[in-house]
Length: 211
Image 1 (cartoon, helix red, strand yellow):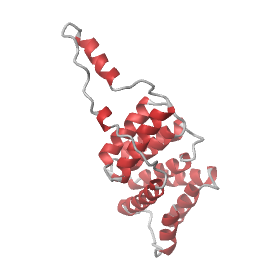
Image 2 (spheres, helix red, strand yellow):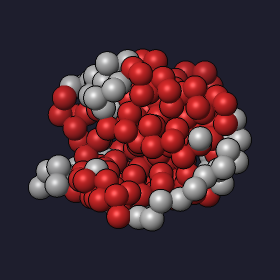
Image 3 (spheres, rainbow, N blue to C red):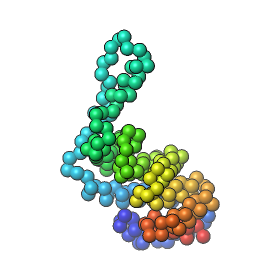
Image 4 (cartoon, rainbow, N blue to C red):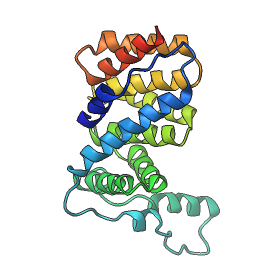
């Protein structure tokens, strides 16, 4: 995030009208994502387990006499693996997703983060996965999908350290969608609720630009 603050400090000040161009907001989001990617590179462990093989693994051959409904249930079960909620398994899936994200393979990263968010229970890696799913969807200009991920993070993990930024991201999406009044309310919520958080500074700057 230090890189982002340096860029914001050195960049010329822009005068925004109430009809802020969506492209400007998207550019800011891309800058934030690049800063996050850079910081996460230092957190990767020396070994990353490949789970792509697991994700693409075909179900075992089923007996021809098994009913169709049982066959479907078997396919679902083979997508999971033993010890699904142990910390080692969670770390393996998350590290693979981060590896794919750093490699700019956004579709593979999205698949891995989705798998983690929908099949595991963890108070740290799940909200982080939801955050990155929101960011990837935002880069893809899938605003509605992105908002759902950030909303899920904010509602399911209200005390997580990424929740303030998730609220701010929702404000960005509202801004990009042309809902300026709603965006302003969301930014004000971030400033008032998380005054000591970095997200508050970002939201305050956007509020000042909207004046």
